[in-house]
Length: 344
Ligand SMILES: NC(=O)c1ccc[n+]([C@@H]2O[C@H](COP(=O)([O-])OP(=O)(O)OC[C@H]3O[C@@H](n4cnc5c(N)ncnc54)[C@H](O)[C@@H]3O)[C@@H](O)[C@H]2O)c1
Image (cartoon, rainbow, N blue to C red):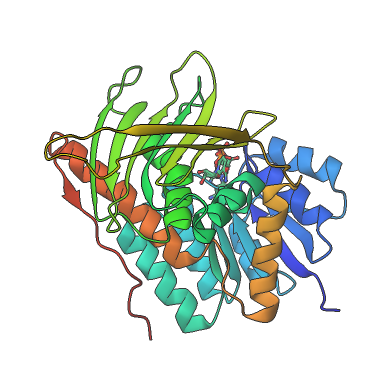
């Protein structure tokens, strides 16, 4: 039995309390400190978890030798500075998605983690969600055939962010899922967006991605929509899947497709359509955040690479940067770099 990883959580706004709850529930982790600039947030955590020490000072967190790992759930603009300081103080670091506000900052964090022999993990929670894992297995086993295209809608009313666009806020979810499912990074992106409520902050974006395998994806993101949609369609040469994260049947597999038989005479093409069974597989119930914390602690204790790896986090940030570049160039098709940085 290894001892629980002693963790400090920094940033107790909307998301941080979910992280503390899961750390508290997991036998492999122990929340020892909670840090926020807001004393009301600290008081609320202190009431719920009396054993967790609270502080407004990030420097106190870094100086405390009990703290082995820091979980950062502050706004994106703070990720790099806080994660870099924590790595330099010898802590393992989990940073909420996206890893940092640029590829350059992400590479800097990866280099610091490698230099200090510390774990750096971005919080791409969906990689630990049972339906996402099930679709991954279907793709990997060949059940869906070659993946032709993926189309996804992640829209609802709110929460408008003050410091980032909808592509930086919601995009990391779909980009990390696509990267995980297809096991490759897109080579090109093009995008269209609009800031409807606050003109300088895009709150709706339509993004196209092209992958080296030939797969294409369309990602629709918005904080302005009458109802919440979390719907992804995966179309393969053998079967199709609809993954709906708001449904009681989150994965539905359609044994459907179109076949182009060899033409009998020159110039005669007749498609045949196949509409077979629709299956909704039984889904394991598990909280993704719990699994994510487990993966982080395992990486610290055993040296394993987390599924939500820092390299995957960097590739997600590169995708968002490509979206921004495309928007700056009136929707132009922009190339995306891939691959891990060379670290010593
Ligand atoms: N994985 C997910 O599904 C998911 C969901 C929501 C948010 N997030 C991520 O979590 C992060 C936080 O998002 P949020 O919606 O909770 O933001 P938020 O604004 O609600 O909370 C951020 C908190 O950080 C605190 N903070 C800011 N600077 C600080 C500092 N220097 N020291 C200590 N505390 C500081 C703020 O006081 C605030 O309480 C973002 O990276 C976001 O992308 C992830």
